[in-house]
Image (cartoon, rainbow, N blue to C red):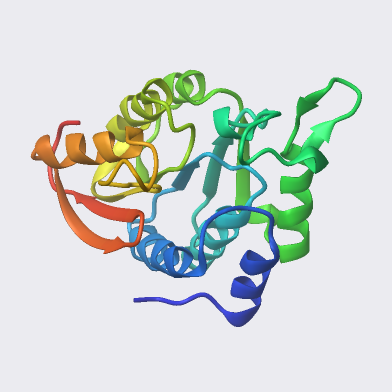
Length: 213
């Protein structure tokens, strides 16, 4: 499995975000393999760009684009009063979260700005306007059933046969975390259109083998 360069891994570890290194290394390997299809790599759920660094570096190596989709107002658990709220990414003028400036600084520091296309908007709306095939879809957005299902139904139809579906925060045990990502993971397997490639903690990597979602 491919590994990121030391400077890429250092930028990943320095970036604001939640993905552990073990899962990040697995994501990088999956992205590097998927990039060989010559199609864009897409991430749903940018936050501040921690995992985007890995996708962008894998995309750079293959000469493809990394796309990342987020409205940058934060997911449910990142709002004020919730466990993952970070007041440093609140826009003081409007009083709402805005992770876009931090994301841009993250990519600039990593030297990866020119390899990323940031799609700023709500995932289902952007997916409805998207028309091309994708080599990788990495689902790491909102963790309600509404949002996880919207991400899955919006983007997986664009995933080419042979492409990679990665899903983060998959917890079979409800005591470990929310179940929405786990449910879309089970849906992918039950569709008969995917085979599992790897399991690394809460990251699941699957390969599309046929049509369907």
